[in-house]
Length: 346
Image: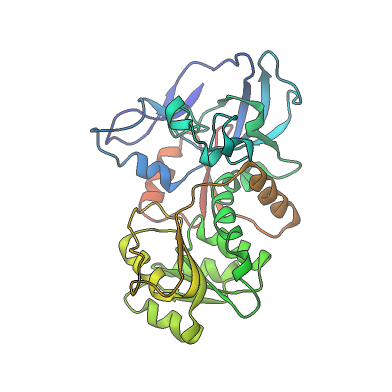
C-alpha cells in the first residue's frame, strides 16, 4: 500500500510503498477514507535528531476515519464496511484515567510505550490503518469522512478545552480565541453553539480573521502589539472570562494573560511551549491556567453529535495521498485556511 512517511530527520515526508498490514487478535484493519494534516506533525518533523522520541520511518496521520476492512480474532461489535472514526490518544485501557474514558491522560502510556497513530506508531496517511482495539473506534453515523476527520483532533481538542470553562461563559461574558486556524475556527463555532458569551478572535493573518467572522466570531482583532489594548476596549475593565490560546508562543501567551479578567480561565492549547508565570501580581486574582491535551472518548462522541446537528463544521481543503507532501508545505507556509485533509483513495 501507499503511505506518507517521515523517514529521515530534517527531510520532508515521502510517499512510499509499504506492506499491507494484517490485523492480529483483537485488532481492526481500516481502509482509510480520510486523514487530517496537523501542525503537530510539523512540530514532530522539526525535532532534532538528538533525543528524537520515535522510530523512523513513521507513517504520519493522527486524525483518521475509514471503513472496516478486516477484523482480528475475537473482535465483536463491528462488521466489515462499517464507517468509523479513530479516537487517537490511545491508552492502556485499565488505569484510573482510562477507566474514566480519558485515555488522553493514561497514567501508563509512557511506561508501556503506547503511542497514538501517527505519533509513534503507523498513522492514518496510508491506504490502510491498523487499530489496536475496537474501543478506539466510534461510528460516523452518516457524517461525511472529509467533514468528520478533523473533528477527531481539531474538534475534540478545543471541545475538551472549552467544556471546562462553560460555567464561566454566562450571558454577558467574553471568550477570547487566539489563533483562528485549524483548531481556533472550530473553537469559535463551539463557543457559539455551547455558550452565550461574546467571542473575540485574534490572529496575525487577515484571511484567518475573515474565516473567524464567517464562522461566528462577534469581534476580530489583529494579534499584534496592540491586541491587548484592543480587546480591553471591547471587554472593558472586567476583561475576558475565558481565554483559549491555540498558538502557545511567547507573544500569544503574553496576550492571553493581558486580556484575562479576575477569576478567568486561561487555557494554553497550542504547542508553542511558551510558559505563563502565575503568581501574586503576575496575573489577575484567582486566574486558572491549564494546558490540556486532546480529549476523552465520550467527548469525541459529543463532538460528532454536534457536527450531525449542524452546530459545528470544519473548513477543509482536500489532497490526494500523492499530494500530501504539498499539503504539509502549504501548512508550514501558513497557506492552509482551516484544515487540510488527505484522501488516500483519491
